Amino acid sequence: MPVIVQVCYMKKWGILLGLIATTTAALSQIRVDKLVIKPREVFKIDSQSDIIVADTLILMDSSTIMLNPLRAENYIRSKVIIAGKATSIMGNGANGANGRNGRPGTVASGPCKNATDGTMGTAGLTGVNGTNLFLYFDRLIINGQLTIILTGGRGGNGGHGGAGGDGSAGTVHCNGGNGGNGGNGGRGGDGGNGGNLLIQSPQALTVKEWVGTKLIIKNYGGIPGLAGKRGNQGSAGLGPSRKNGKDGLPGAEGTGGVRGKDGVVTFHTN
Image 1 (cartoon, rainbow, N blue to C red):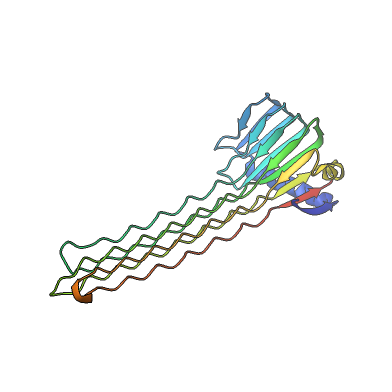
Image 2 (cartoon, helix red, strand yellow):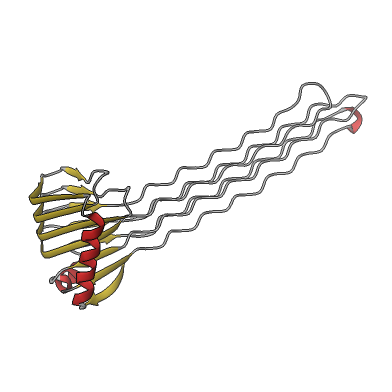
C-alpha cells in the first residue's frame, strides 16, 4: 500500500497550493474546455507543458495520460474527471543504465611475460525519480478502475570486472609470467524515489476510501541495481622444473545499490 498522509482540512493551504501551481505553470499548460482521451489512446503531455487544465476530463476505457518526465512536477486541474475501465496516469521514472563490463587483461607476446590486470566494471546509473503529481478536481467519477503510477526507476546493474590475463609460459632460463589480477565489480545504481501524489478536492474523503479498489496508486521506490561480479584471477604461466609464475588475485565483488524511497500520498479537502 502507498504511504498515505491523513486528509487535511486547511482551506488556506489548498488555496496556497493552487496559487503555486498556477504561478509555476502559467506559461506551459494545456488548457481546454473538454479533453476526451479515446479508448486505448495514450495522451502525452509534451516536453513544453507540465499542466492540464480542463473543465471536463474524460478517460475512456484503457486510455492513458503520460506525464511529462522532463518536469519534476506535473499538474492536472479539472472540475470533473470521468475515468472508465482500466484507465491510467503514468509518471514512473526511467530505469538507470547498466554499468559497462571491465576489459580482460592481456598476455604480452614472448615467454616469461606477466599478464595485465582486468579493469573494473563501472557503476550502474541511478534510476530516475517518479514524477510528483498534483491532482485538483471538484468531482471524480470512476466507472471502472483508475491506476496512478509514479514509481521510481530501477537502478542499473554494476558492470562485471574483467578477468586477469594468463601469464605466458616459462623456459629453462626464466620463470613463467604471473597471472593478472581480476577487476572489481561495479556498484549497482540506486533506485529512483517514488513520486509524491497530492489530491485536493471537496471529495477527498470519499476518494481516499477508494484506494486499493477503484483507485490504485503505485509510487514505490525503484528497485536497486545488482552488484557487478568480480573478475577472475589470471593463471600463472607454467615453466619447466617448477619455474612457474604466480596466479593473480581475483577482484572484489561490487556492492548493490539502495532501494529508492516510497512516495507519499496526501489528501486535502477544501
